[in-house]
Image (cartoon, rainbow, N blue to C red; front, side, top):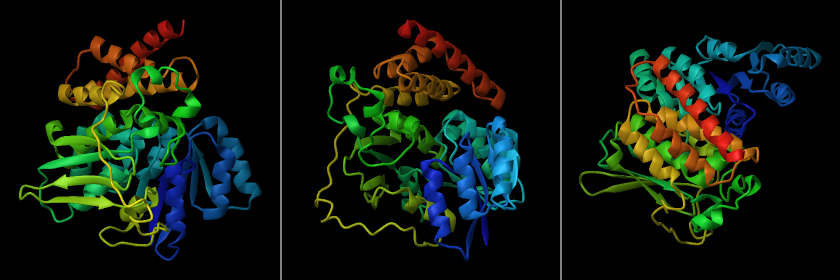
Length: 387
């Protein structure tokens, strides 16, 4: 029986993970569930999955979680705080960890799982963007296996299963809800429009990142770390059908592509059972029923400059990706609150990267300091915009 910690259990990836786990009660079990602040939702998940441990990141929710579990007559032990999540991710309470906490908040528990040699189903892209070199080093040093759960990186993972090194990686992007829009048209975009993704069901922050193409830029940085690929050997193509999740070119002229319906449960099933394949609940792809065509086009970097900013940060290296991620998180939060416009997101990121030179990323403390400095500068820039 594989015991699984689902960190970020109330989010879209956590929900998909629990769906796959529930399909295999003889081999998979959710032993640890965590959530940010949604106590009631976490209690409901505990009623369904009966984990050994439940953690609410917001310490103010501890009493409600404890009392709710008792009222439901569950033996699930209540915990609270980020440190509890980190400790459980590294503990004997689980064999595998689904790292699906959104944002830089997911880094400590992801690193803890890697250092404990866990099977790490990595959905927290900020862990690689903020501290990719450190995370990969810790995973190799402690025998952890990292299986990426982003559909694009999971596709690459599958294409590279025979061990041959790639000559080039192609990440596909749906183009988000504003594919084909001009830069001027994007100026009036609302948060409600930006979170309405045409293909994927995701949280608001990730949905906005997809709309700006920053999500794809972060994935480029992830791919660099996961597969040891330089940025010039990674490209992005817009593929509106979202059926080809990635392609890999090899030195002999062959190109392998992984196709499937846009459903995170496929990647999660790969993560739980690899090298075996198990049922995920996702139907097989029928290209004819999907319209019988696959379209590809280059991304519009004028309308969506976040992708170019990510490539630039990757070239700069060091702390630049951490600062890119921090500035973007702050800008997206301000946009979702209605304080700034859609185009102010890339403008804020660009301003921070221009003002703060990259430093060698030689320690986690250095990376966290760069993250904090970028957030402070982003706050100042956002205050000027909102004034």
